Image 1 (tube, rainbow, N blue to C red):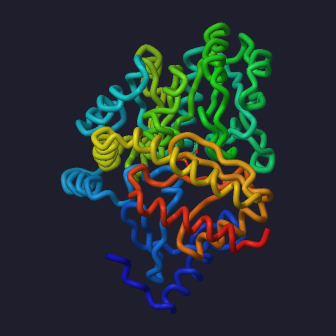
Image 2 (cartoon, rainbow, N blue to C red):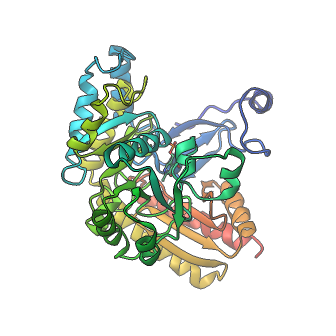
Length: 411
Ligand SMILES: Cc1ncc(COP(=O)(O)O)c(C=O)c1O
């Protein structure tokens, strides 16, 4: 079933009303008006179908509008929406998801504080690291992205996004990603937290050397700092393991999740060992949220988690991702404008010679029916992150369209 097309007059009206009534964060207006989604496909208001090769930016790991997730959402919504009263209300569905998550997190990381989004989960992680170490200094990484609220912005790279909102949190040092010598210098015994994405997403899909995360773990242990891994983009099977840290056998002190955890509903969380998380009880209500861990989001998250495990989607991501990388490398032989292909599982970066060319290729692919996205900090790198259960035939269709877009875009 495709989407029923809207008439051109109402499409134009939506465009005008969006500009008039919805906050814009770019001066360009929005291109796509989306009205329906299923699996790896989305449809715009004119009825045009697209293959979504970024999956809401690594959100829809089990596919858009997954019927089992929808079922769970509807059942929960019919039963109970919001009743939370801080510190007093136990929500069985929230407990079920927390328990299920503890079975897939690295050993010992058994307690989660649920939030609504990634940036809020990062805020909580910053507070927990301060609380557990008594230190406020943070080491973060060039090219790292952790969100847009003030704490998360303070530890995210790129002056252009930071300067207009300064002063931000004090005591943050940025060092190059994948540089253990710089880490050795920066992680002193005054540092409370080291925060890193195991594979950088918005920085342009950078996979570190094999010794990088184990090296950070050792330095944090030596100097008494909390190691926080931001797995907001890399988690839930995306990179070919349930969490990307498993590629290197590293267990963080705090694991931050969002995006795919809610199966398409707003949900996030920071996860730690019980004795660390329990510090938030002193003083009581040290951290709170009205909607974090909403029953409907938790029901969706449980359904989605079950699908990822039952259908072995992490293993599938590893296999399908390797195939896509192989196909893109073959394209690289034919089109020298492709500078690099990199990534793990279904988190793949495709780098072109210039940001302008990248933009043109992304635009042409969209006209031809594939949605791609460049990275916030790396305009030359296109991110490929489809749903983990995208059918193979759609992978081939998408790759053929990407190749056509490259062929038809003047270098
Ligand atoms: C690695 C990483 N951390 C944090 C965030 C922020 O998450 P949210 O947009 O849910 O606030 C993102 C979002 O793109 C992300 O990719």
